[in-house]
Image (cartoon, rainbow, N blue to C red):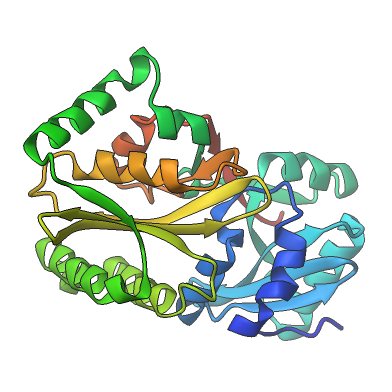
Amino acid sequence: MIEFKKLELEDKARIQQYTMKSSRRNCDLTFANLYSWRFLYNTEIAEYGDCLLFRFDTDNMPAYMLPVGNGDLKEVIEGIMEDASMHGFPFRMFGVCADAVSQIEEVFPNRFSFEAERDYADYLYLHTDLATLKGKKYQPKRNHINKFKNLYPDYEFKPLTREMIPDCIRLEMEWCKANNCKENEALQDERRSINAALEKFQELDIIGGVLMIKGQIAGFTYGAPLNHETFDTCVEKADTAYEGAYAVLNNEFAKMIPEQFVYINREEDLGLEGLRKAKLSYNPHIILDKFKMQLK
């Protein structure tokens, strides 16, 4: 029997002993995300068969994420299926990347169906691409940044500190008013996640940056390590009255992220047309498809 428990802040080391060594790069595994979104998903964890397991709520029903670890995949998935059966709900697994699909098919031939969820695919970029913006394909981004620098030559980009958090929250409140968050449940949830993350940003290993113009906050961004070679940019918010602010945030933050991280995961587009266009415009190195898996 698998013993699941509610995810808590003190589980960080326990979780990261699996995730930081893993080659999986999907943003669902960033501890800062797991912690700051637990209110929505009632996330639970367990260790079983040399793997870390996640159980969470979605569509008003429990589901699982693909296990992380070095255990026997067949044995671990069979254990998860038994857990679902014991609790009387259908077995569903999310966040199954393409390489895992082939591994699962090998040990469970023709037993599961796999449905790609394009809206939840992650955008992965080479760190050096976002930091340098070299080459013809990034000329439009360099143009935006140069225009911003001409308009606001006295801008500053500073590392996020605890003293800056109230200003970041105020900017997010203004952003919410401009984007009608009261009518959008997903944006309300995001707001709650941002507040949870910023409240514990040091404990969550969050690195962030704040864009300042004449002493006023014009944008902020933050993220955290996903694994040993991938950094996850979790949030980016800017006052669009400052033309080019998002391009500057992205570039300055990429320069700030430690060099050890080869990849930057800028998460999903959630099927939002404008967000998809913006993420594609940065020429992703990988669009990481994730599949929903269930019994046929």
